[in-house]
Image (cartoon, rainbow, N blue to C red; front, side, top):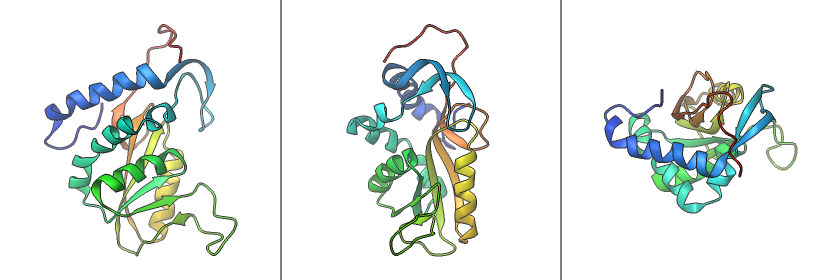
Length: 183
């Protein structure tokens, strides 16, 4: 079931339906794919076909407004790489500073060995965003890294395509064997 916010379920339904439609029209391909988490799938969501369009990215970012009101974060966080794109758009829209969380520690520069890019202080609330999750393993690892730094983290994804234990704007799945979509 998609996460629709606390009191705005009916008002957000057109936006959720739009998101589902735009994914199918622009970002969905069918085939045999190995996903980042190591599982196989008969469909793939190419989120950069969505995020590369500034109008689509802005509209997706606006879907997070009720969540921002609920969580009241001090920072918007994004996971490398797609989560950083959506976090940047949400940060700009909400006028809330952002941080980026790397998958591996930075190997160079003044802050070598660190996972987090951007300014933060212990105790701050972070809305940590991811693009598409299946198991949310990487997102939950990023959450753990931030909590080690004494940040208070709420996770949310644009799309959950599995049984990830995080809320998302949209729970997206296809029945096996549905007609192939070409992009």
